[in-house]
Length: 369
Image (cartoon, rainbow, N blue to C red):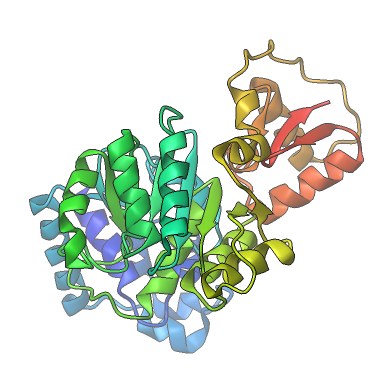
């Protein structure tokens, strides 16, 4: 990565009134982060969502660039890997989410595009029952190759991380602050181990405090990174329910372990199950069955020939071509292969299912008829 472009990429994230969605539109319009700062503000008014007020805030600022240059130096000094949303190593599952961060900062050795990723979330004050469930879930995932993601918080989060370290599973902690600190500080010893067996990930530059507003933003990364989100104990208004709601919006598979009726720590999970926002699971076997991960372990059939289909739209043709290269594909893999957003992909797949072109399998896996 050329340092100059990285500086502009970081500077883009520091602009006032410009969030991740608009920043992506600016990159698409201008071609690069550097060009965003070299384009006249009057030209930005043509871009949907920008307008004259926001256009005036997209200006080359010496102070802004200097702060970005400081961050580039911090990245180099601390062996951090910056991941811009156009980079190959950027998590593709997250990239398919419309409001994903344009920039991530990563310190670790795990592949963020590994085959199976499970996010585990829950209350900060779990009961012995909840803690046991979390430990058993991770223990039973031993040898599965799953990457375990959570938020390094007290309770279920740190239980999932600790259990993963003990089980030999890679685990990534998503932070609501910069990589110049660990919050809570009591988890520093685990964070240091995770860098060698997984990693730490954030969208925040150094010096960012773990302020309240950063946690819902952190939760969207936890939700977007995974194939499956598992909720273990949550109160009715718990932060884990925010993560589950975001995961549902991202078209992710959400799971919840049921709890005792009338128990405050069970109300969140039981509510998710009752309103069909999460599948009820009692074990890893349930998770693997619903995600269709048992089928993946079976020998693959020979690749299918592209069927002779007439009246396919260009989008449907692209999906068919992708499905001929592999016997089965997850919806995220189809998005990546076709470069379609998740909304368009979902719509096309549904229409193709109605037309008897493809078959939908558990876990948002698709195959040709």
